Amino acid sequence: MPSDCISYQKSGFFTKLIVDYLDENPQLQQFYNRFPKLENFKLQIEEKDQTFTKDIRQILVTELEKQYTNVHSSLATEANIKLLKDSNTFSITTGHQLNLFTGPLYFLYKIVSTINLCKALKKEYPEFNFVPIYWMATEDHDFKEINYFELNNRKIKWDKASFGPVGRLSTKGLEQVFENFSSEIGIGENANYLKKIFQTAYLENSNLADATRVLANELFKNEGLVIIDGDSINLKKLFIPYVKEELLNQTSFQKVSQTIVQLKEYTIQVNPREINLFYIENNSRERIIYEHNKFKINNTKIEFSESQILEELQNFPEKFSPNVILRPLYQEVILPNLCYIGGGGEIAYWLELKSNFEYNKVTFPILLIRNSVLLSTQKQIEKIDNLQLSWADLFLNQQELFTRKTKEFSKFSIDLSEQKNQLKLQFEKLYAIALETDKSFVGAVKAQETKQINGLQNLEKRLLKAEKRVHVNKLERILLVQNELFPNQSLQERKLNYSKFYVDFGDALFDKLFSQLNPLDNHFTIIKL
Picture (cartoon, rainbow, N blue to C red):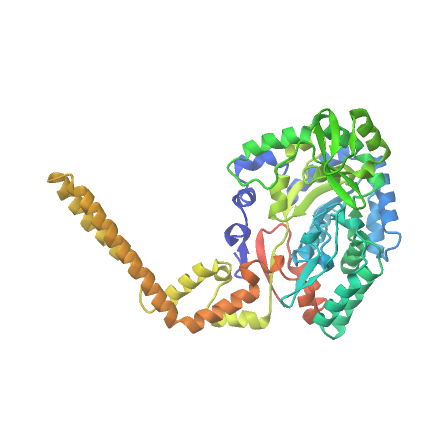
C-alpha cells in the first residue's frame, strides 16, 4: 500500500457493513447487482440498455434543457445533455443535499469521483458515452442540516424558517450571510472570486435549487457536469406507475423489511414506512399515511379516498415526493444510470433496496463508495515527519495514538504482559495444589490472582501516565497536528468547507483532486497542497 494512503477498511471510519461490502464478503452479494470494477460495467450497460427507452431519454433531455435555461453552461455540459438522447450514452450519478456554499469538503469529492469515473469508463469503453450527473436533493426538508458551513473555526449560518422542500426555499435573507462570509474570507484574488460566485449563486437567484445549480455549474462546468432537479412535473409523470404501486400495495415496505431481516447482524441505516412518500407543497412536506381506508396527510386535515388520491396523482404528480427508500428508484427510472456514487451511509441504505428494484423491474445500479481525501500542507507534512508519525498513526483514536506513541518514545517497555503471564503460571501451580488439598481453597487462590493481576494493570497504567508526563511536549505537538487534520477528532472532509483551501491554493485544489483521485481505489488519498 502506498505510504500516503490508508484503506477505508483500516481507517476506522466505516461500518462493518461497508467494510464487508468493500471486501466483497459473499454473504452480501445478494444485496447488490455488480461490484464496482471496470470489467463489470459492460454487463451493466447491456442490462440498462434493455430497459431504458428512447421516449424517456427525450423527456429527460427536454427537462434538463428547461432547467438550464437561465444557467451559463459550458459547451461540455450542453454537449453532454444532448448526448443523453443517444442510446449509447449512460450516466454516472451522485447526489447531495443543497448545503450552503457546498457545505463540507466531501461535496467536491463526490462530484470529482463521478467525473473521473466517467473518464475512466470512456477510456475503457470508447464506443459509449458517459455523462456525470449531480442529483440535487431539492425535496429534502431538513434545513438545519444544510443552512451553514464552517470557515476558520466559525460557523457561517443562514437563519431562516423552513417547512417545505428546501429547493423551493426563497434565498431572501442571504445578503447578511454574504456579508459574514466576505468579512471572514478576507482579501486577495482567490477570496474575491469566492465572493463573486457566492453573490452570483445566492443573491441573483430566487430559490435554493437554482442557487445550488448555478454554484455547482460554476465549479464543474468545464468537466461537463449535468445537474438535475427531480422536483419536476415532467419527470414525476414518468414515476406515476411506481407511486401508484406504493400507494395501493406498499410494496417497498414489504421488500425492504424482508431485506432488513436478512441484514440483521449489521446496523441498519434506514427503516421503511408503510408508505414511503411525502405530499409536498411550497411550505409543506408531510408523510402520506393510510388509516381507516383513507389516505391522510400527516399534521393536516387533508385526506383522500383511494380514487381521489389516484386522481390527485394523475393531475398533480409533482405533489408526491419519494422518501429515502423510494428516491433511488425514482432516480433510476428517469436516468440511463449505471452507477451511484455515495458515502458509506448512502451505500448502506442502497444495500437495503435491491429486492424492491427487482420487483419493480428497474435495473439496480452499481454502488461505489466516493473518494475520501485528507488535504495537507507542506508545513503539516514536515511536522508529521519530525514527529515520526505515519498516516496510519494519525487515523487512530486520540487516546490510542497517545498510548502507542508514548510506548514508542519510552526508553523501557511499559507493557507488563510478560510479568502477567509469569504470575498466571505461578497461580496455575497454586490451583493444582488447592485441588489436591481443600477445594474451598480454590476461591481464595482465584481472589488472590485477580488482586495481583489488577495490581500489575494499575502499575502499568501509572507507568504509562508517568511516561506521558515525561514526553508531554512531544505528545502535545502530536495532538496539535492531528487536530489540524482531524478537526474535533472527525474527518476533515466532514467538517471544513472548500473555501478555506481555495483562498490559499486556488484552482490548484481542483487540479490536484482531478489528477489524484481514482474512484475505483478504496483508499483515503492524502493530497499535499
